[in-house]
Every structure is written in C-alpha cells, then in structure tokens.
Amino acid sequence: MAGDRRAADDRAAGEFAGMDPKCLDYRLTAKERRQFEQEGYFIIPDALPASLVHDLGVVVDRLDRQSRRKHGIDSQEMIHILDFIGRDDLFLRLLDWPRTFPKVWGILGWNIQLYHSDMVITPPRGVHSPEKRRLEWHQDSGRLNLELEGDPRPRVSLKIGFFLTDTSKPGCGNFTIVPGSHRRNRLHFPEDGVSDPDDALTVCVPPGAAVCFDRRLWHSGSPNDSDWTRKVLFYGYSYRWLRPRDDMTVEHLMDRCDPIRQQLLGASTGGMGYTSPGPEDVPLRAWMERHLPPEEVPL
Image 1 (cartoon, one colour):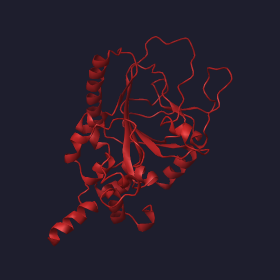
Image 2: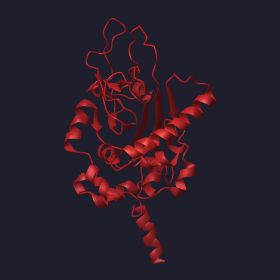
Image 3: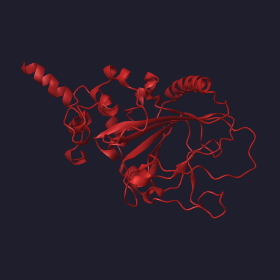
Image 4: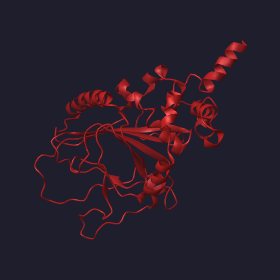
C-alpha cells in the first residue's frame, strides 16, 4: 500500500515525466532573456538536426497534398494547417524538444500548455506582382488584442517557429518583424498606404533554425520569390488558463505521453486545475524543482 502511494507521488512529481535533464544545457540564457524582453524575439541556431528537418519535411509535404486535395486549394496558394500536432507522431517530438522547450518555461514558467499549432506552407509565387502591397502585419491571439486592458497588453503566450526550408536570404517568404513592437499596442505605417514600417526587419535563418517570439510582436509572412516552398511549424505555448486557439485533437496521443507532455496537451484534474493547479496538474513544476536551483523556479 505504501509502495502504491509512493508510486503515485512520484508520478505526480514528474519522476516518470520523460524529460532528459540534459535539456538543462539549453535553458534560457541571460542574453536571450534580454533580447526577448527588449526586442520581442530571439533566434535559436541549429535547433533541429538535418535528419529531423528532412523527416519533418516529408510529413509536411504529405499533409500539404492531402489538405489541398480535400479543400480544393491551388498548388501556388499559401496554406495554413492548424492543429497539426496530432497528425503525426513526429510532431510530438518537438513539443518538449530539448533545444527549445527550456526557453519556453524559462520565459513563461511551469503553468503552461500548447494552445495552438500552425503549419504554414508558402509556395513560390511565380511571376512577381508589379503592384507593391503592404505585408499583413498583426499580433497573435485575435480578440486578446481588443479585450485585454493595458499598453502594452499582457504577454500571455509565445511561439516557437521551426524553419524547415532555407530562408537565409530575403525573398524566401521570410518571417518579418518590427523589433521591440511587442511593447506597444499600435503599429505606425508610412502614409503612402502601401509601405511597411521603416524599422521592419526581415528574419533570415537557415533550415533547422528556430525563432522564439512574443505573441505581441508585430509580424508577418512575406512573398516567396525563391524556387522552393517555404515550410514553417509554429508551436504556440500559453498559460493553461487560456482556451486553446484551435481544436487540439490530441486525445489519441494521451496514453502514449509522459505526464509533462500530457500537461502540455491540456490534461487537468478539472476546471480548477487550470487556474489553481495542484501537483498532478503541473508535473513540469515538480520536474523544475528537482533539477533547477530554487531561485530559478518560478512561484
């Protein structure tokens, strides 16, 4: 009986959580924290090995073909595939990927979840349009930006973008941002009605790199004038009390997940477990308490 109780306590404490302590080698650095606070983003070079980039690309291509056939989407049109996390087991590996996940809990703490996954596929646009158009600038999370008070509004969530194709030079459908714009609710544009902000930055990264960014950072995709299709996987992490942004079709994964992955996929002992979590709701907290100095574990 005592052994059963101890086993239950160990599970609640994250003993069998599955995260390799070697991930601590990649936890958030002081430089990354400063850049995230000041500019709203930072780049994680070599986040994924080339072999995994290749394997993920094969799965993305398969889902791309299936989605275009199902919805009648033209092969040259950009496509978003939401809630992709449950579509292939390979995507589950990136949920708590050791080179990126420590950055997430280093910023948001332990009461977190995956609330959104977005696969963005941008084919070459072919003949370049002579008409200059402003990029589609936005902050993430929809009505949070209308209904939350404050200037700036609260962070609430962040994203990790895994880049599977080469965007190391402009014109490849690059992720484009205004550094530091997470600290203001409005973005100011040139008066000509078509130009982008003067301080816009084209983020240039090779395949295998990842970008971590604040949901409030003003950002956009951009035209792809290269000869290859741009593929990016965005994992959105938030506090557990925020409703998921997409369907989170993950029930079929739960039995194969360790406690921390179950937490990230939305498991809870009940409604109160999201806002006032106990140990069984947040095994990530117990894992951090076991592996981090006490001063590094958030309250």
